[in-house]
Length: 146
Image (cartoon, rainbow, N blue to C red; front, side):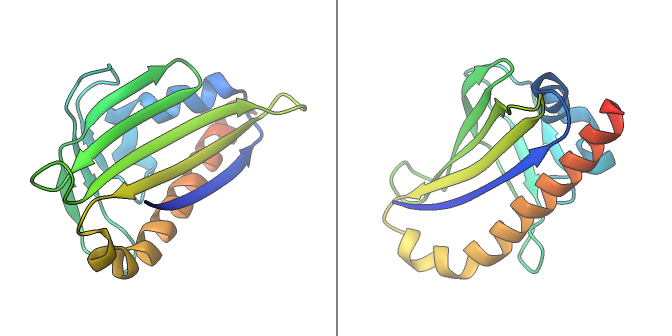
């Protein structure tokens, strides 16, 4: 299994971060990495997620939401064709910090037979996409908190 892990501190309450993260309809307004999600943040729901990694190829995939734990965790699983070929479990976790803000953990765990073939070429653009999304979410959340 391979993993991309990022985190960012946000000077806004976890509830604000959660509302932004789960308001999929507003993603085109602020999210440079995931400009579109069609669906609802409900466990068992299939989404249509469009990603546009910087320097990478845009794509749309249809993950299933595995967990929605308001206001702490959102997790989905996407697959390429069949289970076990190239699976990606995407995870957002929000924790409250000592100063009343939030820390957003944003990561994806990859598994499957094709991971060694694709991960090296996609991990750089994907990490940059995560970081761009994290920074955009921080800016939006802190604008609402002030």
